Image 1 (tube, one colour):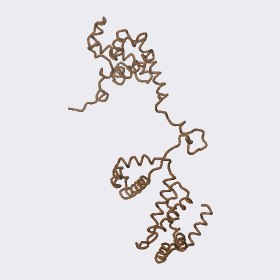
Image 2 (cartoon, rainbow over the protein chains, first blue to last red):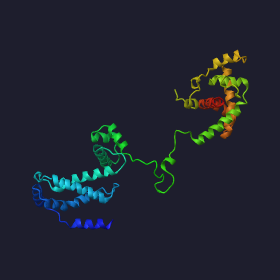
Image 3 (cartoon, rainbow over the protein chains, first blue to last red):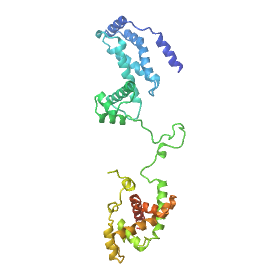
Image 4 (cartoon, each protein chain N blue to C red):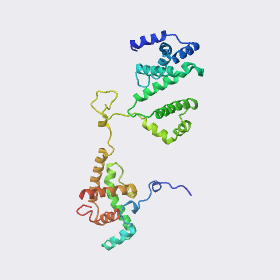
Length: 240
Length: 97
């Protein structure tokens, strides 16, 4: 872990948490435009933002970036928190922080950008599949997931398809050796071309059959031609 | 009635439908008789299978399969072999063209 980040965590850890009463008081002051109260509220809850960011640190984004995004989510929550509803600030802020981090991860991962609802559905789908497997011991079918999410199977399938990881054709073909000269497009099999081994075998077989044809009597040759529907014109000049 | 077993149950019969423009044995016999090779439909079939056995022999040799009469006849009757030979003959024709 970078020493800057360690220092930051230490600093964050030193900030005391707020009591319920303090939260309400600060919220009231924030409402009346007190900037200092706003700063205090943010500082006192930054631990929550860090903890949420850490949860998502294995999603392919830098932890520093995630902390930054979660802090932005926290600021949004501080500005929108309504103390009158009687909830603890952390309960309310958690969702804003989580949403902010998720949005950042989705924006950074993959070259195909999906709309927010699609990313949300995919996230719910993964979560649901995990919970289902934990409970029943086997993975749910796509139809089951679609039913549980209240979406159609077609929509779910197209979302899964859109979210698949993309690979650059110009990238290295071997992930273990990024300096390899071979790129992905050089290694991909072209199915539109005939298989070389098959072609060689086929050519060999054609030659064998061609030789065998010379052993046929004119009677056999004619019957074979008639049975296979090969016209005389076709065979003009051939040994058949 | 017992379930059908054996080669034909698995691979089916070779029919003229499998060869575009191909004749049935009766038509072949008529045409051959007209051309001076007197034969009936059964002979047409025997001649056809004899020709295919001659073609099957070197193919058996390539794949190290015994070239006994019954083995060659079995290959000659195999619709997959017949379709393969028809395709090869067409390939030879295309190359000639």
